[in-house]
Length: 339
Image (tube, rainbow, N blue to C red; front, side, top):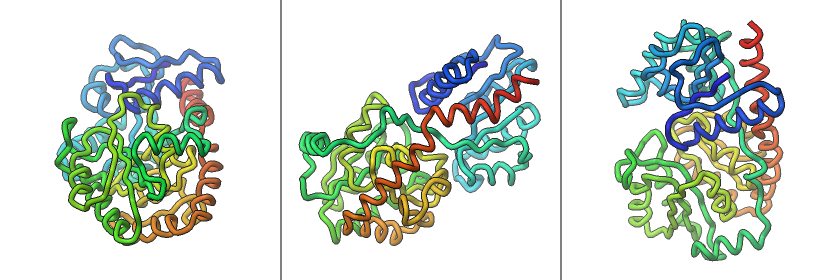
């Protein structure tokens, strides 16, 4: 069977690598990642990117194949015409797809509301590599914070996502990711606490300009390799997810796996993974006051931060890629391969 990824070394490609690797090792079947799907016949072909399938693959994939499509996030209220087009194309493609995978209950409910039969949907959360994402020892944390210029007495707040439009400076906000909400939350927190914001990812210009305006110190690094983000998690006291819509985000499990307390809006996997007040805090979308109050509780209580860190580690352990990959195999691929 084949897992189709996009041409760039993005998160979709890494998901495919993890799934294929563990299914080969644990289930003993031939599973390959590929960027080309033309010429494949009589196989299970899993499109890890809806963009690839709905923008062209639907018309080019051979009819003999059994097609699986991964759908992460998106809503008809999204102002972008591209998203509306994708949702319309999904409606056209449903009869040609054997299974549609989504990573959250929110995603599953949306697919059903758009006319996808519930029996055609599999809800499988995103995984995390626990051999890479794990807590640091205090000396590692201190050394990394010193290298990045983060004061010892500052609360370090993290945001590691692309939240500007395009692939340049990103001075125009990608509002679905909530960079305006992030800045509003930081402004409220900075009025009471000494903060240092840690940013990674491309297109962070809007947030950086906002932090300059607020006078909140920050450090930004555009990391070229995915796994290089791990020591940046180790610097954090709190990670904020302020999005209006998400599939994951990956930071939920990555933060938990590295021992970082999470405060998130009710988006994507956050609704399924976070148990409010136990392993993280979750508030409604757009609730700037709620985000700030939740983060302040963590800032004011090292004991609560430790509780969330410990409980988060337990939650993350349920989503190691070895476990997630076998859910793909057992729930989706094995039944298709048997028919």
